[in-house]
Length: 218
Image (cartoon, rainbow, N blue to C red):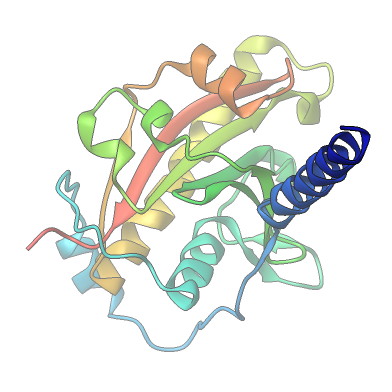
């Protein structure tokens, strides 16, 4: 009986050790984005003509190169010497953080490194909006304002400029999608408090809007 007990103990130890290894192997990792392709694209006037909101998406995944171009177009650095971005912001506060929710997890775009930083190893797409389609869209962008970057300004100003900055970035996404043949829609029907908890945001961070991106449904 003692030998059986020892054998069972060894089995349990090995089983737990393997289980721990499996958990670690499934940890979410950063996504190193590809260099953005800034050549090409369609003429601006044609892109403006074709800009629209679509709410029906194909399940087709967005390739890494297209995803890399998308987040750079949204708020990437276009002037490396100064660190300034494709979207303007008052006094260059750059207070809007771009989160990317995909089936594999939640990521934060870091423009300086041009990388998607791992945040949560969970599929939170369904939490990014009240519409049924959001849970299946390949990419849901979440615009989060960081009020701490404004210093001691009144909350009214923080809210105003955060809304303006979010509008700039979301329009960049619209124009990129029109040029690339992608479908997109910006969404205000979001349970912001619940989403902030799911994302584990800090008190000084505020969810502004979400935007779905994918290929159009055929």
